[in-house]
Structure formats: structure tokens, C-alpha cells
Image (cartoon, rainbow, N blue to C red):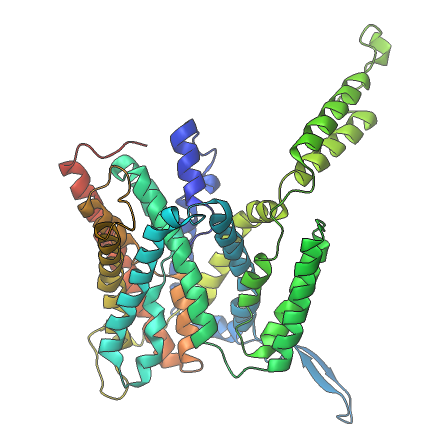
Length: 471
């Protein structure tokens, strides 16, 4: 999955030669933080002094309860909300909202904005979802584990980007862009899978009210409204309606992201005209430099007024969708996803049989083998074969200066499934903690194996191929 635009990062670094200004701005930082949180979660879930507190904390009720002594009023909101559910159904909506903003941007003006640009990553993403789902089904058809076929279909771009950035110039820029566009298309596919196959019993009235509210937001968008409150306040109501509708509430974030306007409040002409006028006023507001007694510390009150106006003008000249994506990305990367990892990656190691991915039962199936081989084998094979077919049929073009061997190596990194895989794992098995934990272990093992395999292949192939493109 993508937490910020890898394409934008690659393009900026490649064309302008700008280096990240700090660790938090490095493209690998998000993956490192996630990895640290996974380790912390595993420790908290297994250290005798903390494991009970860890699990009890996640099960703590967060619902607002209104109850009268006679029982006349007995109301709770949100219904059956625990800390773990609040993280997965509430906090993660910010992640899905940001993903929705990025998907919309790429569709409107990015790597998915035309058929020629989109066909290769879209077909590769489709292959990378179908193949692991088939492998999982081969292992688990007709068993209790069969519903988890969607677990190994996702790609976690935070880890993939981190590995690509640490591998430096061994990978052609075109393949980095390809993997990012693929992951964005993969996210869209994962969202559709969750919406269509992992929802609960639907409350049509709630869905109808949510649809009416979203239509109202769409209408004010078409009317040219650019103030943020008119979009974010209804988003909270839509989330609540999704929560009670049976459709997973986080999908409300994607739906509302598609309604956020991309057009700026001020036109290019108005921006330059107004900025020129403010600049002149700012210069005129300066003190009399010939009189030392009139010198004031910069910025004085008059300066501050014009500087605030410039900031407001600059902000309004960037579309709301871009501003929200830029503002939310660091919080998603370093707050939302780490919290999700802390709440979902903790598995008790006392159940050592979970680590034996070859355990199979005709009744239960084998979540471990399905997820592990789905990620390690299914993802790269699906991505590679779909790409090969698209290029050979002439409907897509091979990424510039890329070889088939290097494309396969990069496709192996597509097998790193973490955030979305853990998310689907919890949805697929509901209250079956045993199956969920088996899925978590398999996700961690399969993602690690895919990361190691992809990294080693890239290193080996880059040594043999001196023509690999430099960034």
C-alpha cells in the first residue's frame, strides 16, 4: 500500500537531485517504524508481565453508554466498540481516506490517468491478486480457512518502498514507478474485495442515508464549494452510517476521499495578481530605514497581516485533495499505521504450532501454507505473468531500461503484504482468534520471505547487469 506518492518521490529525486532533509522524510522510514512496532507488539503479547495487560487493553470497552435506572433508556454509541475495534474501524479510516486521495490523484493526473499509462500496472495488480487467491484456495478449498483467500492478495508499499530506497540505484526508476502504480491499483482492488466479500449483514436504511449524504457532498462540490468543513463534517456522519450498515466503516474514508475537490479555490491568474499586490503592500509596510528610531523587529503586526494573507492565498491555490493528502501522510505513516501494527501484530508465541506453516487439517485447512505461498509465490508469479502477457500482446509497453529478470525481482517485493493483509485477516475470520493468529504469523513469515527473496534477486541481478539505470 502507499502512504505517500512513491512516484512523486522518485520523480523529484531523479529530476531535481533533492535529498531527504531528515530521517522522517526518508522513504524507508515508514517501513522501519512499522517493523519496530511489529517487534514491540510481539514482545507485549508474549512477555509474562505484559501479555495480559496487552490483551485486556485491546478488549477495553470505549462505547459511550447512556443508561437510565429503570432501563427506559439504554443506548450505547458506537455499538460494541473496544480499543482494538476503534483502531481497526475508526483510526484506520484515516489510512483509507489517504489511500482514497492518492488513488483519485493517480487516476486523475498520475500513472493511472490514461489507458496507456495504466494498463501495465493495472493488469499486473490484477494478476498479483488472482494468483495468490488461487494458491490459497488450492490449499484450503472446502475447509474452515477457505474464507481467507483475500489475505495474501495485498501489497504493502511502505515496506516495499523502504527496501527499494535502501537498494539505491540497483533498480531502474521506471520499475520503481511501476511498482508504485501497481500498489495503488492493488489497493483499489483490495478495497473492492473488502467491500464485496468481507462485509456483514447490510442495513439498507443506513446505506441509503449515507448515499443521500454523499450525494449532497457531491452536489456542493459541483457547486464549487471549497471550504473544508463542508466535506470533513459530513465524513464523520458517513462513517457512523457505514459503521451500522454492515459495510466495513473504513470504506467510508475511500468513498468520501473521492468527493474531495482537486480544483484549487483560486485560479492561477488570481494567485499571481493577488500575490503581486500583497508583495507590494508588504514592501510599503516596511519601516523608514533612514530613521533608526523607526526600525522595528521583523515581522511587526502589519507584516504579519500580509504574511498571513499570503499563506491563505497560497493554501487556497492548491486543491483541497492535495492539501489533505500532504497533511495526513506523515500522520498515517508515523501514527496511524504504527498504532494499527501495535494492536494487530501481537501473537502469543506459546502457540508454537502456528509457526509450522505446513500444518494441515481436512476440516480446518492450512491458513499458513495458503498465505505464505500466496505471498511468496503467488504475488510475484501473478505480477510477472500478467505483465509478460500484456507486453507480448502489445497492449502495454515494457518499463524503460528494465529487463524481465529485474521486473520479476521487483515483483517479489509485491509479496510483502502487511497492513491490508492483517486487516483482511481480521475480517475473514471474525471472532476465531486461533485462525486470525495463524494468519498473522503466516503474513509476517511470507512478507519477510518475499522481502528477502526480492532484495537478494535485485542485488544479484544488478551485479550482473551493469546497464541498470542510475537515478
